[in-house]
Amino acid sequence: MPLTEHPPRIDPVRARVRRQRLAWGLFFLSSALGAVLFIDRYLSRIAGGKDADILRVLIEELSSAYSAALLVPLMVWLARRWPVMGAGWSRRIGLHLPFAALTGMLHTTLNSMSRWALIYLPGIAEVDYLPTVQRYLLSLPNQMIVYGLVIAITHTIDRYRAARNRELDAERMRAHLTLAQLDALRRQLEPHFLFTTLNAVSTLIYSKPAAAEEMIARLSSLLKHAFSPEQQHETSLAEELRLLDLYLDIMRLRFDERLFVQIDIPEELRHARVPRLLLQPLVDAALRRSADPSKALVAVKLVARADHGRLILRVSDQSDDSRIDVGDIGLDNARQRIRRMYGEQYDLRREAAVLEGSDTIVEMPLNTEKV
Image 1 (cartoon, rainbow, N blue to C red):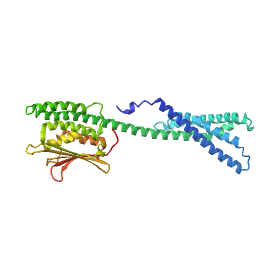
Image 2 (image 1 turned 45 degrees about the horizontal axis):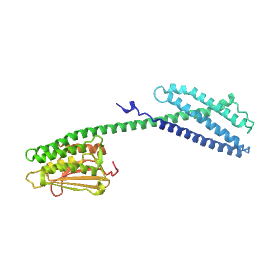
Image 3 (image 1 turned 135 degrees about the vertical axis):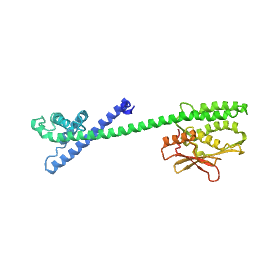
């Protein structure tokens, strides 16, 4: 279901803070506008040889700006209630004409009342500020222009906000889809992990019953550690190495002295973030390729290096086949998770080693922030 049908609830505290910020912003904007108009009028009076009358001119211009600021929320509400965009725009424009005249008259009335209270009553100047028909008509053209500007600015801001919200909704949808896909991949990986480990147990049941029993006990600890429901999709490389060590304990029971696993990971990379349950499928695939009965050792090497902002993991085995088997769920799963989590520019691939054997290479962004 699209997220736009169920928008997130707005925090009342955040909504109140936003209204306060808008109110203060409107206050400072109107104050700045009033100050600019005062300076322009004051300088014009000086240039024309008239009395500056600073206090009266300042109160008149500020009162006009603040009166307009009080009417801005009403104009914004009218713009959103009857938008001039989309179908039927011509009819709604005609509807806004009397609204513009009404708000203009309200502005003139507020100007007259505030100036009468702040200038005439205190005796600052003996000026008649009572509204007249002539005053309403003379002020109306400028007020209509201001009304039109507020309508246009409101629609521009709303369209920008709507476009941004659509982008955020689309991004949230992509994030939810990615998480759902990662969850599906993890659920696919868990039975595969269990199957490969139980398959190793089955090879020892008759030949080495004691080792098989020990393997089952260690498997229980491993599964409890690996598949905790609270775990996230990422973990540290150090945590993955601890999980891998539990898995290798089981494999040592299977291969005895034949198993040789070399791990070369610098200390500064052990805090790097990697997908959870990444190393076990890589090493498991390498062990299966290296488990040749004709060879004395089952040798696997795991190397991690940093390269220009990327974390490179290389798992070497003794196989001459550098292809990824179609049915290799572990490697295919790891490749899909890497692409889902980090993008198509990161990948898992197989290639022939320089001397002998083959390498499984994983590239992902280097991120050493704590999980």
